[in-house]
Image (cartoon, rainbow, N blue to C red; front, side, top):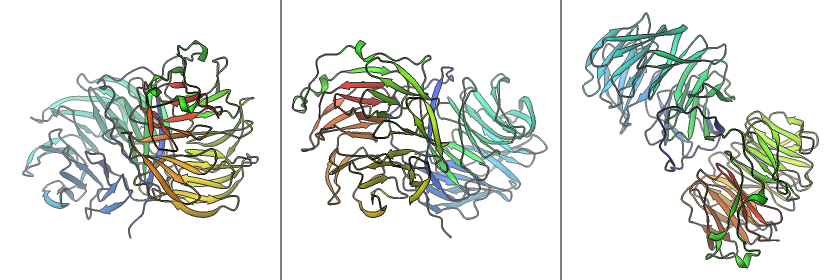
Length: 626
C-alpha cells in the first residue's frame, strides 16, 4: 500500500550564496537553528539527494519529492541502501545479493555487478567513473561504464563503510576499529587510522577532513592527508550509525542509536543541536546540496529539518537606539512615497543572527529571537536575557503579562518581568508558530504535527484542530477567527470560527507553500507570504484573494501590517524588506542593508518603528502612526 505525507512538503528556495565558503572549518562560534520541515512515514534507512536538491531516494526504492511531499516507488527490491552518481544519472542499489546499476531517466536496470554479493555500502568517485563497494571483507572497485571489476582489495574481516576522497585519489574503508586508506588507482595500502575501539559504521569526507563513526559511540575527525587524529567527539553511549558533512564542511550531522540526530561544529567539535522525534533509531543523515535541509531517516520515518545558521559574535553587542545615526524621517503614510522610502534609516540594536521578533503590547520593548532570547528596551538600549536558547515562535499576551516561547522541546509560558518559566505545555514538542487569543485566555500552537488550542492559564490541551504540519497561526483582532498555514500537502489558509472551533471555508489560490500570515488591524484582510516570493492579500469575509504583490525574488518569511492598516511590510530571503500600500497594492520601495536572509519583520504598536531580523536586528524609523 502507498503511504501519504503526514506533514507539508519541505521547500527549496534557491538563493545565491552571499560568500564563498572557506575549506577550513571556522572556529568562530556558530549559531544553528533547525525546524522540522516535513515528516513522511516510510522506510528511510538510506537517503540520497538528487543533485538539484529536489528529491530524495529513500530506502533504495522510493523517490520522495521534497517540494510536493509525494513519493513513488522507482526501484523494485532496491536493497538495503542506494547511492546516486554525482551527475544523478545512475543509482547503485546495494544489497546482500549484489549491487545493481540503475538509470534514473527511466529507472531501468543497466547492469548487475557480478561478484558483488554480500555488499553493505558503495561510493561513486567524484567523476562518476568508478564505483567502490564494501563487499564482504574487501573493497571492490568497478568501472561504471562497463560494470567491469577493476580490482579487489582485501581490507578487513568485514567492511561496513567505504568512501572516496574529494579528489578521487583515495578510497577509505571502515572495518573493525580501523579506518584504512587505499590508493584508488593502484589499490595500494596508504595508511591506517587507529583510535576507535569497535566496528566502524560510517565514513564521510570533506575538504581536508575525514569523519568516522563507530559502535563505540564516538565520532573521530582525521586529517586524512597525514593520518593525524584531529578530534574525538563523544556522541553518547550508543552506536553512531551515520555521519554527514554540510556542503561547506562547517557542520557535521550524526545519527545515533539513542534516537537522536545531532549537529556538530567541525572546527571546534562543539555540539550545536540535538534533534529528537524519531521513534526508531535514525540510520542515515544527509544534507541537501544547498545545505538548507537536513534529512534523517529511520525504519519508519523520514524527517526533513530546515537548517538556518549564522556566526555568533562574542560577546553579543547591543546599541542604544539613541546612539544610532539617523536623519529626519517621515511621520505619516502620506510622506512615505516611492521616491523617499529609500531614505528611511535604521539603527542596528542587536548584532547576532535572529529568526523572530515580537513587540511587547506597550511598544516599549522588543523580544529578539536570537540565542539567547533577549528583551530589548527602546528607551535605554538595555537587553535582558529571557531564555538561553533559540525560540522557533514567540508571542505576548495582550496584557503583556505572559510570554509564550516555542522550541523543539515544547512551548513554555513565561513571566517576562520576573524572567521565570511558569509552565510547559505537555505534548507541544517541535512547535514553530504560536499566538494568544486577544483576551489572553487561549493559546494556539503550530507544532511539528498539529495545530492545537490550549488553556493559557493552566496549560491544559483543549483541542486539536489540524493533524498535519502547522507552520504559522494568527488570531483575528476580535478573536472570532483563527487562521493557520502549513497544512499537510496544502497551500491554503485554514480558518476556524472561535470559540466553537468550527472549520470555515479556507482561503484558496496560493500556488506555493505559505510561510507567514498576518491579520490587518480591523480584521478584514489577511496577508500571506510564500515560498514562491509572492505576497497575497485576502478578503477574509468573502473568502477571496484581493491582489497578488510581486517583486521579491526569494521566500517571504514575514509580513506585518502597520497599526493604521495602510502599510504592509514583507521580509524576504532576497535580503530586502518591501513596503506596500495596502489600498492600491503599490510597492513603495525596498529597505536594504541586511546581509543574510531576512526572517521576520514587525511594526511597533504605535507605528513609529519597523523591526527586521536577519544577521542583526534593525529598527527602521518609519513613523506611520495609528
